[in-house]
Length: 240
Image 1 (cartoon, rainbow, N blue to C red):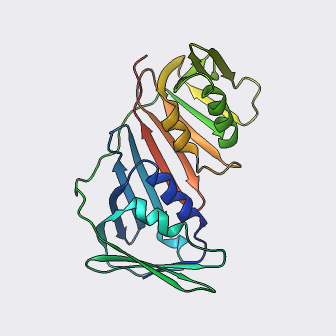
Image 2: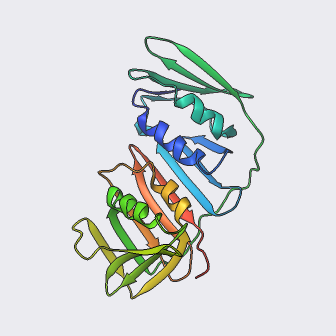
């Protein structure tokens, strides 16, 4: 049985995952809860982890089980302020209880999902950018005015986002931003889906930073904390 009194980060984490992946395997062991899967279109890979120490109680047999993320997201979204979340596993079911003024119990059947243990990319990135998530989301909103894709660039040590379409063009430059730290071995440019990128950073706390890593014409990695949990996204690039 797993107990959690502060469930807000779990709620945000499951919402972030379910935006891309409808079902997948969760690994429960002495290190905590771990989820890793790739979306059906194979454009984004997600790696999510909650350490054991975060939970009020964590007593569960090591398990590797398939759970419907879409349905789990619906359930966890029903938690009310003041509730304690209690989760448990049996041979065939995943149970989620809310203990509060109104005690509620939800049960999901475990599902069969491919047990392939996905390996994380071992890319050596040419650039890393640490940036406030709110600033980055605003830049993406600007970019979405004109296109469904975005160019991420490093030029003379500056982080630049560029989007253009038939109706216009927008360029965002980090030159004057205090909350942007760029580490780069040179000029870099790569293109990505703007819609995917907006969904990736949607659940990042506005006061926290993102770590964005990429290289010329290659997949990117976006890492950040969701409360007491950690999430990494690997996003495929688009052809320039």
